[in-house]
Length: 105
Image (cartoon, rainbow, N blue to C red; front, side):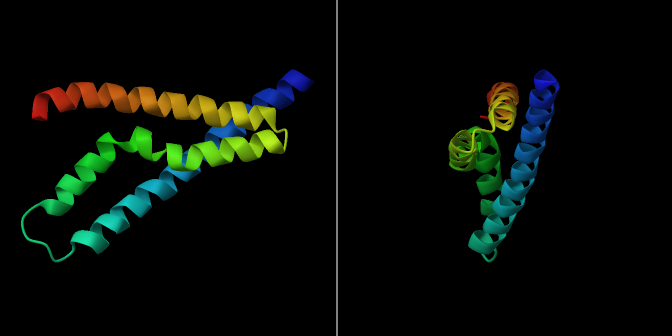
C-alpha cells in the first residue's frame, strides 16, 4: 500500500512541476513583452530564444525551494516526482539545445 501511495505522490509531483513550468513560460512571455515592447528589430525574439535555451537553469529558481519545502514536510513521493520531472526537463532541453543550437549558432 505504501508503494502505491509513493507512486501516486511521484505522479502528483510531476504534475506540480508541469504546472510550475506553465506558469514560468507565461511569465517569460509576459516579461519579454514588458521589457521589449517598444524596441526595434527582433530583440524580443532573441530574449525568448535565450530564455528557451536557458530554461533548465531558470527552472532551478523554483524547483529547489519546492524540493526543500517538500522535504521539510516529509512528502517524499512528491519530492521525488519534482526531481524526476526537473531532470527530464533538463535532459530534453539540453538535447534540443544541442540539436538546434548547433544549427542556428
